[in-house]
Length: 258
Image 1 (tube, rainbow, N blue to C red):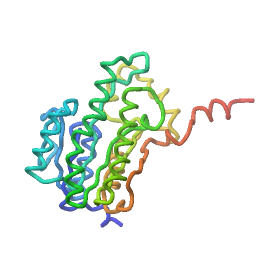
Image 2 (image 1 turned 120 degrees about the vertical axis):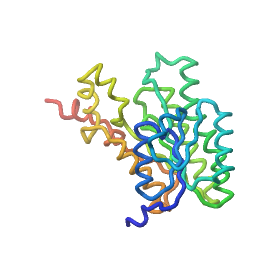
Image 3 (image 1 turned 30 degrees about the vertical axis):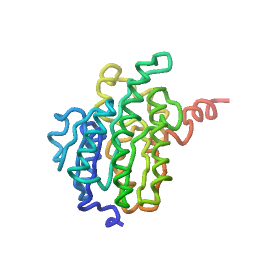
Image 4 (image 1 turned 180 degrees about the vertical axis):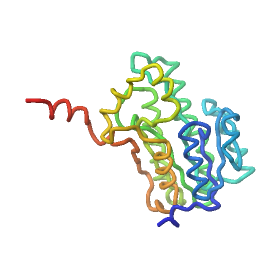
């Protein structure tokens, strides 16, 4: 089985490589033997990752992103695997959404992912092979707040399914990983401001904890690998059980003293 998880010599392009989840995804693919290219809007975040190539672009700028990835393809060819990982949210509720917030979150989380991957999908289809894994969110499956982000991540799932259906005949697979809350450094400032925050968060998770970046990365590497060669158009939650149901309801209502 381990041989099916190897990606020796495969060229992988990972967006958002400089972030907490991105670091783990880079490490997972390097451990599997892949040659890794990393993309981020801040080149300083890519310096210490041991990447074969780097791609600097701001996904909020669709035209510039398309130009950058087209140049990348011209120089290196289409990657064998793309992991569309870059994303951003302010953790807002509906009352805090206005046109500027909506446009910003959709631009980064959906439009930028399309701008980067669309040229690669067509190059993969022309070659006859390729695999894409999109990092969406449980927010794209049900509502947990973050309405603009959620709409963008739901759109990302729909886009991946479109690729799976319309380019599957050309050997292109597209799948989605949907994390719940992931314990990255992004949590540090929230916990510093409210050390008891996890007391309110963890009761919603059946495993009683957040998932780690490595757990997300392992799911991504599996879907990209030959072990998942028959899998396309799927959404795999990596969420400590959050999307399986409403644990808080079970505990607070069904298990409540009668």
